[in-house]
Amino acid sequence: MQHLNQQNLASIDNQISKPSFNRSMLKTGMVHIGVGGFHRAHQAYYLQELATKTNQYDWGLCGIGLREEDRNISTILKKQDQLYSLLIKHPNGTIEPHIIGAIVDYKFAIEDPQSVIDKLAHEDTKIVSLTITEGGYNFNPSTGEFDFENSIIQEELKHPKNPKSVYGFLAAALQKRRDNKLPAFTILSCDNIEHNGDVTKKMLLAFTQKLNPELADWIEKEVRFPNSMVDRITPVTTAEDISFLAKNHDLIDDWPVTCEPFIQWVIEDKFSNGRPALEQVGVQFVPDVKPYEKMKLRLLNAGHSVLGILGAIHGYQTINECIDDPLFNTFLKQFMDKEATPVLDAVKGIDLDTYKQSLLDRFANPNIKDSVSRICSESAAKLPKFLIPTIKENLDNDGNIALSTLVIAAWCFYSDKQTDLNNKPLEVIDSQKVVLQNSAQIAPLSFIQQKAIFGDLSKSERFTSLYEVMAKELYNNRGVKKQMQKLV
Ligand code: CS2
Image (cartoon, rainbow, N blue to C red):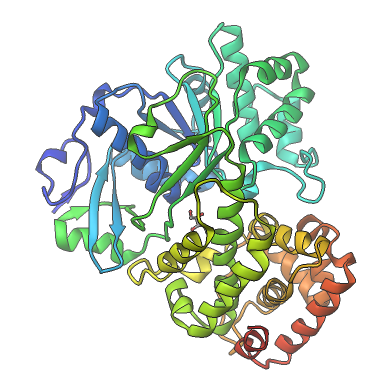
């Protein structure tokens, strides 16, 4: 049995694909904030492909963790010389193992904040990419404005030399680059938010305006914030994934990542200081990424939430279990066709029917076993981006809203009881868990009156009356499937 690290790399089972390039020569052209499973299955995978294919050494990665929750990954990556395994799970049961070596450095801000600023301000750093989650952008979802009430932000504005948030670090590093007369880096958001680059720009400018208006002007002129759409289903790593490597490949990896075979990255082609030739490994560079983002968020991510929330209260554990149920399958199709699609913009070169069918196939991958608890996690941050805009746009256009409304009613029940409809406790993971539960416990109506999540949706008489009837039925426990049946 061997531990995964650089020294052992050559003697690790050759059935596993390994980095063929010389890792010690890779410069860290890209610095990534938020090294979770998704980054390791997606951007790091693409950069590994690029280094393998082109033998170009400018685009290695340095990972950065800003939060206490990143301590564990920081320790594991350090121990493993930033190496980890990626298990690509095919629908026929095959598991394709890769060792990814594109990350060559990692900095943990809580232990050494200065090293993070220095890395970001280093001349080799050309791009700073982000996966800081849908909830990590610090904007008020009902106004879309930067949230200056956040106590961390208030602290940072008082002590800019002691940054804590992503904005504090970006501002400190950009200030240092400006002082050192180095070109700005590109900031590349890879989170599931519509217009993710524009949002990042707006938030960083709001923050730096307060901090130092001259710096804000420089950022506005020099920093590019391409919008991007990212896609690869990446379930939570399980103990079986770890033992799979030990049993089949004699390899001890403390935190492998698993994912589906599908992968996609569409990026707006505007960069401040050069970019990797990722088109050589299948990344699409386009002039306008917005229609792609909207299509993916409103069909794939919302589709996940539809299945996850209804599935959770019904008692299903995984997304493929939901999709195997013909009623859930039909419900999802109708949600996509009747509610999500009518408010989408056309995407050049994409046939929406083919795209939707591909989502059904991907969700059905029996080897992925993506848990409904992962999908439902942080719904308070996700639904305002994935589902609620579809309801609002359909209300404006007199479109259908019934299927989406049932999902909101089910989410109220889920947040309130934190059990399925058979009283079995559910694992609810949400930073807003207490707030959600408190408002749902007052009454279903109070739940949708949470402005930070729903904006003024509860003012719609059409939505509210339908929602209240549906919530009542759920609370009287007539079963979620009976209600789904009535709608399809
Ligand atoms: C999921 C996403 O978090 C969620 O609810 O919908 O993580 C999804 O799997 C990815 O965006 C796929 O690209």
